[in-house]
Length: 497
Image (cartoon, rainbow, N blue to C red; front, side):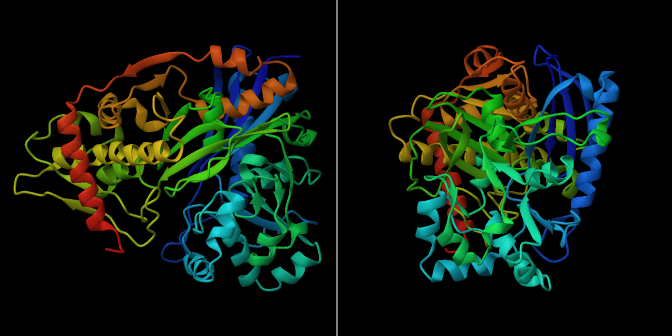
């Protein structure tokens, strides 16, 4: 069997398909952006048909560029934007409503009502998550409540639901497989991560019929086979993981205590805690990192909602840079005597604050503050937020997170200036790998290892290669002054103060 593996990376703004060769190197890529829909303030939707058509076209494009046929591909791995949910008709595969995206805040009042009823502790104990509109469960409940006839049809078994991976697999297999993996299930507010089952009590609270939900499999498993007519030959789907967990795998963070952060639109830091399910006391999420051969590996996760999105704001909102890559060079020109703090709460604050009502603010402006100072404050905000996450992780898991090295990936890590700033704020090394396609690589490894054409976890981990390590250079006293200023800025920004 060939060593070619295809990864489908279905993201928030675009879909990509990447063919990896037998040496686990990217060979060819197809990519297609798709429209975002904002039907109301704080609402974000995708048309599932746009996603489906984009995925099919990018798979075909990647195969064409690689000069391969579908028969040359040993397996497909899928990674996807997590928490985004779709409901569709069992008979036709037609969605009954647009997909509600992870960024969507429409169920904030539902979450507040559940909190007022004292139910957050129940959800957290079973799912490791907080009651926040970010997660899939309340979005699914909203669709059942708001689409005419949906709840009745769901209870009759006429509808199916799932995260984006589940919808894609249903379509790719011609409706023969209604499945997901443990990592995606763990982000729904409906899955008990201790028992690895859909939880009847939580389903009852959110009034979600179990018949709607997919079978939950290991992250490397048999998820079905693609319809021959789609690509010219049937291809087995053998790996699935949510995007942040796929990056954990792609960064080979297989040992407890290993930490990765992906810097894209937001930033997601995930700490492997092994087979220990660490209950956070500092507003982090306890989640499933991956499940292999029936064994669940857990993680602590911190979510920063705005990272690269703040650089986009510099480019598109303030228009002080022409392209995102210019931000580091502009920041380097900032007046070192000015201390600006940008709290980028454009859509609220994520971990460890979880303040959906907070909004962005900037502090320390003087008459001399200009584009360079704004650029520096923007990049520094990412470093400060990363430090907040690492501090919370250290408090939650004192035995395993103290001497860690941060492995990084995502679009922002091309900036040496930003990564040096992160190392300085963390007072810890930051490692950038040579292979930055870590999310797609993680999905591909799951599929390739399952197919028997790629190495096992140990050999895969040994193949990880360092591009550059950034070590802290900042004086400890200066670091403390800056962190104190950051925490004061956050305190002033929180909606509860």
